[in-house]
Length: 276
Ligand SMILES: [Zn+2]
Image (cartoon, rainbow, N blue to C red; front, side):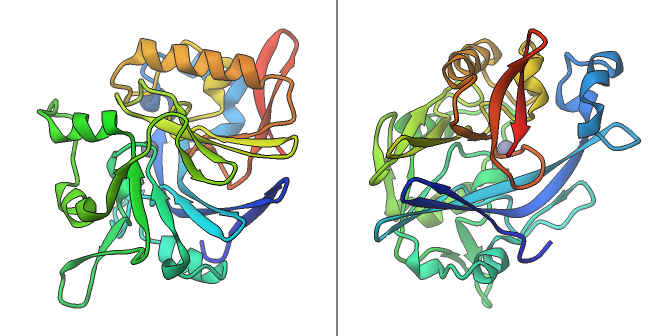
């Protein structure tokens, strides 16, 4: 996958959607409460063997003279199931230089979101990947990962340490650039947040992993295997979907298929997401 950037306009703001790579998981493992039967209406999202392929989406947002990067993917990890490390090449192909990024906002500190925040140089030393950027996430997220973690949470402490001198808190409502604001959606992790982009009457919502697959917009009781507080995650998801349903707002979760935004619609008594 090279040079696949997808561009969207939100009023005067441009969003460039790129991917750092992708992973593959069985749909029923990704959502332990789902079954092959309940996947049936969503089977277009799965391959013949029932696997869901999800990208590690990153978003470049150009607002006025500011450039913000949302999330950095998995980084250079090449496995059979998880494959990352495409971000820098994708940015170059889209004409974005790392030095142009003013701030990097990370929705939450899971390995598939912070992986390219710092990269190893030829001497194998970790260096900040975006040399002029401030690195931002919520203070609740910072506190969670700085504390004692449950064994299933894998922390990239090496990356946290590399970017620590550049970190600045960005909590719910914080402005990352004109028209680019942090949207508080905890539950997937205790400090998880999305981003809302607004210009004129146009809006776009980057959901991070608050909703990790479009099927969850219809199957609201499915919780992702990685949710730290599933009930809180579902409540936030429901509140956001109620606000977005039937509007022209562009919506995308990081792990939605392809590199497209979509809209939240209702038909035949069900809420669903449709790519634009
Ligand atoms: Zn993720």
